[in-house]
Length: 455
Image (cartoon, rainbow, N blue to C red):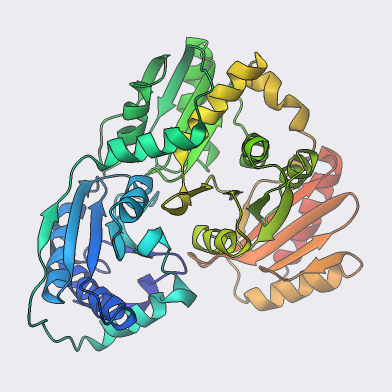
């Protein structure tokens, strides 16, 4: 059974196990990837990294993916059960020609999928090769290579990735903190366990066992209901900090000592300021969804803020184009320009935050309190029949504002600003609005919602 075209998303491949993602489809994807990269590198014998997450379907999907790659003449470096950031590190460290990790990120247990890269962990997305690979899968006309590929098992990649990320974080001291960590039975436990062996901490672990059924709660910390257990535990344990990661471990979130979630926009601004100390005047990228505090903090630290489209692959691409040292996405992805590529560094993030709390001798709540300057609506999602019509209606209604169409529409007024865009992964229209105060935010949020809901 081939994978249907609609599972090939803007950033990765995701679908329901059995009906959309199958072992047969994984085999075809391996064949297609081998053909695609061999056409780009005709004079090379390809070496490709393959990893997988903890979902119950992942071992078989990885096995068949590897079979398809080797039939296409590609040598495989099998790194086994790893987080997505570890996978990216392995592609760069092993100097591979690309890689595929079997994962559906934070999606429910009934899903699985694949993330694809070129060398140096450069993502393959919709406009950068994914559609070409989808076409190859659809046509399915593959000729086995004269010399099949080999498979080499490579161990120790988690330890290497953690060491690499610690090196970028630097050697600033860290106090002994009380930490609560919730990995939602996902892959974040893999690198956080290795990290906690290297930093002084009294750790309470929540939902630590790898379990692709996600028996405790959904592995998506962006949804506040999935942070509730962590917030409660931080208060009960009188912890200094709470850490949460998503299903494949490429996103990281924090709860302060007062049990409040640290907004990703403030977190990326703080991380940008930390990075800019070692790279004065450097460029920092962030996505266009409201989070104006990020721009404020970058400018206050003397950096050059650059706005990008939404999506981890698009931000990474833009970072490479403008030689940015750091980037952050509103959804909890934080990217560093590592020596082996541009990709997520959750261990670097965690350590730098612990270092900063130590350096300033403040609680995390006190550290970020001055940056809670704006009122944010949170991300509002709507299913609409005609996305283009809704976007046009909103644009006309707010015509006196400054308009950007970099990604959807972003309209800015002196006291409020918002972005409305179609999701790249779901049939949704996403609205994010921010304002100088709560009253203005609520009024303008309701105004936009009324425009979206016009029948």
